[in-house]
Length: 317
Ligand code: CP
Image (cartoon, rainbow, N blue to C red):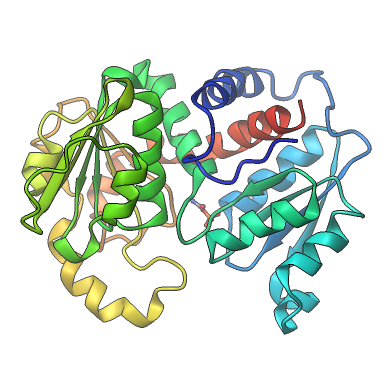
């Protein structure tokens, strides 16, 4: 049985299978295609807000022939303290697969273990694998294979999105640079697990090194160093869901790390700008930079649908 719990544990070959199949689902939409989820009901168990992930999975499940069932975690007994492993054992006897958005990565892993049905991580505090698979698909459809490319992530380098980018770079072998203030750089443990071979002199201000498959990782406080010659400049919200109590600290620390036109002068002239949305203009990205790159950003959002189909198709095959 397959799950998609993290990019850390997803084999490279599986990532490549999903990325390749996504193009077919995109071009084939609206035509007659297989209904691999016919007769199946999939639960969407969400403990956090969502627009793109929820809608793309609901539509993807329907268009693949299945029935989605949305469960707000607060509305079921899970919200009143029923253990995740008991919820998992019940759903596992009634539905065919589950897509989960929650806080702890361990909850998704526990759910998969106890439910014994295919389980997809739709975002935890540690990873957002479906998003980063979509981002890579979106990059490759505009610029070709990612391995020879430079991706600059600017902002909260300790976030779930940044961590999934790190594991993607380690699997697919591209150059990832993370520009983040010292307090918001990826945990050393994540870098070790991603296989960074040379951590650099730990001055507390930056580190990096070689990755497997020819990739490289740089973590720095220096924005211009991270963005220099980048093919893709990527940012995400500064206050992730669950971090609201840290809002003031985060806004202050991350203020210099805005993606704007002045910063983009250091990237390649035709660099793509992506944002996984929702975007907070004037915070992580300026209004005019967002609108100048809106076509790419909303292609990226649409691609969630095509990639979710490829994920579901891979997971049940
Ligand atoms: N990018 C993303 O996961 O969007 P939602 O939170 O709207 O699902």
